[in-house]
Amino acid sequence: MTLEANGITVRLGRSRVLRDVAFSAAPGAVTAIVGPNGSGKTTLLRALTGEVPHEGTVRLNGRDTAEAAPWQLARQRAVLPQATTLAFPFNVIEVVSLGLQEAGAWQVARQALVRVGLSGYEARYYQELSGGEQQRVQLARALAQVWQPVGEAESRWLFLDEPVASLDIGHQLQVMRIARSFAEAGGGIVAVMHDLNLTAMFADRVVLLEGGRVLGEGAPEAVLTDALLSRAYNWPVRVGVAPAAVLFVLPQAAGDGRAD
Amino acid sequence: MSALAFEAAGPIHTRAAGDRSRLARAVTVALAVLLAGAILCSLAIGAAGTSLWSVLAALARGESVPLADSVVLWQIRAPRTLMGIGVGAALAVSGALMQGLFRNPLADPGIVGVGAGAGLGAIAAIVMGAALPAMIRETLGYYLVPVAAFLGGWVSTLVLYRVATRRGRTSVAMMLLAGIALGALAGALSGILVYIADDAQLRDLTFWGLGSLAGATWSKVLTGLPIMLPALVAAPFLARGLNGLTLGEAAAFHLGIHVQRVKNVAILAVAAATGAAVALSGGIGFVGIVVPHLLRLMSGPDHRYLLVNSALLGAALLLVADIVSRTVIAPAELPIGIVTAVLGGPVFLWILFRQRGVLDL
Image 1 (cartoon, each protein chain N blue to C red):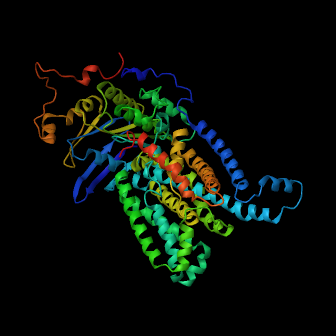
Image 2: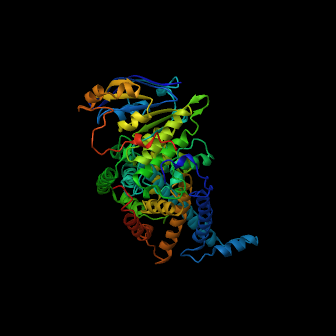
Image 3: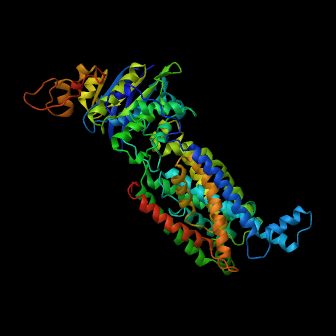
């Protein structure tokens, strides 16, 4: 009942974007993939979801995903890409309904829209929304696909590629809370994260990539360290140090996103 | 809205909010009525004075129908009407399929070179058909031209998709540029074939290339329909796949869609519908781009309704255009391509103008 990948190597042209990466994630937890630009985060997510050809194996809930039919995979996991443009004038509820795996489950689509805070947007055109709103509509679409975090006696999975990249701090916390509660209900979350603060705040496990290899993995406290981050980002980064007399806004200061 | 507000989940809005499926079904009913009306007009109106109503009245009274009227109705207007229905539905559906496949409202077999490829196939069959091995010629018989048009359209669609799509995303600019190149190439090769054609073949080509429903005979109609019908029947089964493809190939795969299968079937259906339409009518422009676009404006882009409604509106529109083309300067005929271009050209420009901001060009 886990996600397990071994020997993942991805080649783009002659260069190897990922080199023999081993990755695992457990349901009931938020697993974050972090690393500098070009370290292979998104490529790893695409390999895990079967989107790019790769060497090595990916086993989801114990089954080799390479041998599963698309519809079987779709019942086990949903994927949120970084950004999605649409060429046709779909309205919001139509986009969310694309995620539905069963005909007639229209309530699920509407509840997913409530969940991402866009209730009342049903009849708006997707193309007329802001980038952040579009991203939340896509999240609702992914949620509608795997609405029950545990189904058919197996955990369902959400793969998120930088889910908060185009969101303001309030909506960042909202989206991370949605991911958190999906995991707490027994589902699995694998998220590529750019923001280390939000990662520290919401992840149970962190996988740090650098140059297509795993540099460190484990609990946030074990991976988000001065030594590992400085090496990965090639910059002297310091963790947990509040500089004196400098203005900063930390998501942590907003609490953990729960209402008081 | 506060970031925390989702915890207090608001009431679920009624199913009606944003739901356009009922509207789309109402449009289906309205279009079916429109098509029925167009069929009656197409049978009733023509250069000859034959009146559909007097024929029907005669039949109702159990009297015999005058031979001249029977010939006009049964041998001239009926096959022409059936051909109009088939060609109009095929053009509109192949446009809608292609736009879904390329995730682009500008994709149309006539614009991106697929029609030209099908035309090249048809011309090659007319000019070089005699050089084919006897076995192939005898097996295909009258189907040679439509089958060749289908093959020409199929090869063009495959090449176009291959050039315009990279890593599962289709580039609009690449698609249009590749379409221009394909159209030019097919046009040039067609030109060479016309140049080497003999007089009899030239006459065939001229008749074929007029872009017209004139000269519709039962035998001609019946060679096109068997190629057209499978495409029209298959189209609605592609609806869910094409809906998913609007999010991109990767997202469609994650939604559980067998992307490669949907693409293969859609490309075959586009080629079959375009090939048969081109073989029957010589290629009539703008139906494939205007019809799906109008329907998306009316009732949304959901392919579950769009494909069926496109077939109905395409058929009705072509019948109306044909009625115009054979009555406006009767007893002569205006080529129907002129009528659809006069109607469709401005609509196409209007689409481009309105969607400048939305289209990701």
